[in-house]
Length: 176
Image (cartoon, rainbow, N blue to C red; front, side, top):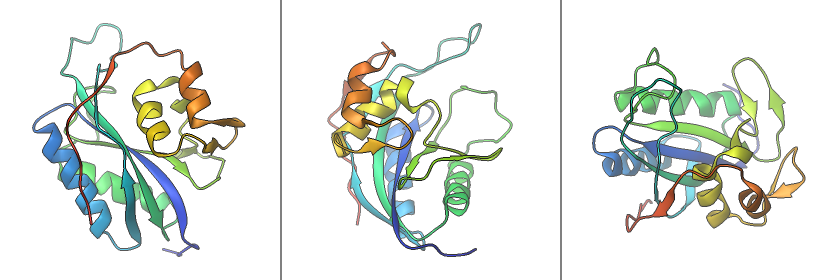
């Protein structure tokens, strides 16, 4: 694993199975404790409607937040850390798409990198259409210009076509 100069990355955190709050807290603590990663901030936590594919049964609401990280890990290594944390939380890699999950970690942004490989696309390709990710991202960095869009997180949120429910909670995720 080759280290890179320290950069800022944003991770979307979500859970809609099991103890959702505990899963988000544990994920943030594990990220902050991981070598080469430091959690700088965590957004407010929102309860959000679960997106699902046509024909899928209803599922529990998600808790969602975004964390701002400082990291010296390259994006693929950061993604490996996310996948290991998801597996440790009980997520199975062969679960159907958009099924309930005990933990979901999405690399939303990695500094100003624009990347499109079979394993990783940055910024996250569906970020502009996901209110559950844009709302907490805009809380942390409203003036952040999302690479490849020329628009700020706040502007993308204002233009987001997603009408799914995104409600603030009283949950606070502490770290450090």
